Image (cartoon, rainbow, N blue to C red; front, side, top):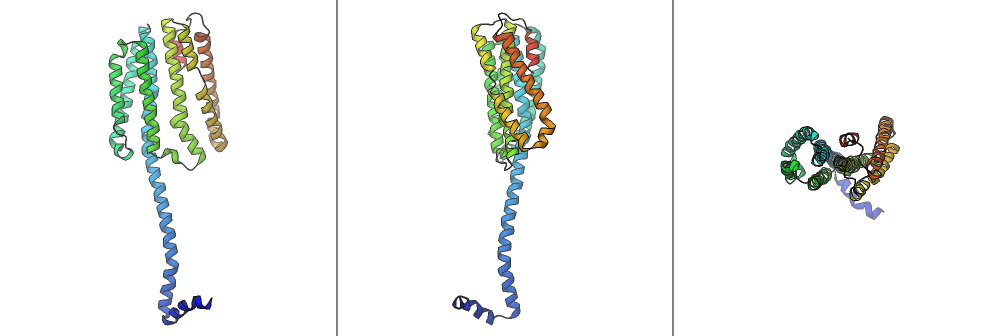
Length: 288
């Protein structure tokens, strides 16, 4: 031990008291500087991630509105193309909402496209919407329904991309991670599943075309697998964040019951029915 410390002792004996003090201070400061540097880097990373999440969240609202309003347009257009032309004014009004949603999306994209690398997707989606809408009221119901559905699917995919680009799925808090995943995936998928059922069912009732094929399609769209996944997410959130349960449990239970009632309505009025007795617009409205 003495041999190991002898160089340090020898150096110390050659230094003045002031020099010894400076040397000791430097030796103590070095690990402190390293610690504060690492801490600062970590804090900057947190701030950077927060900025990315904030920028990405600005896209989510217009994208969510687009999925909702395009789905409504799809359903009402399907009713129109299957014989109920009284709904045409509602289709036109809903199209105006979609146009406004795209304007909001394109405005945000113009500001943040470089930060989140959107690769022109908002513009491409907007162009497709305009192309579909030009011929929607004169096309074949099945084809137009399919085109709208593909567009909505690409919007949902873009929402996922924005969430990933904005690092929204990297939250360290388990409850927040589940909440963000529900907002980006589970809830939009459930809403789209309901939208397809609503639009398809309303079209079938409008045309009074309760064929076996149509009944099977409505039955497939009535599958509640998305609702089951959403239920798991919500129950986990309520367990991990009791304050959310206090605020949202009543609303969630009411929404869940309304969904179950609508699935039962589709079963009664379409799947098990011999003829169309329910008004198509009423069926559509109850699913909105």
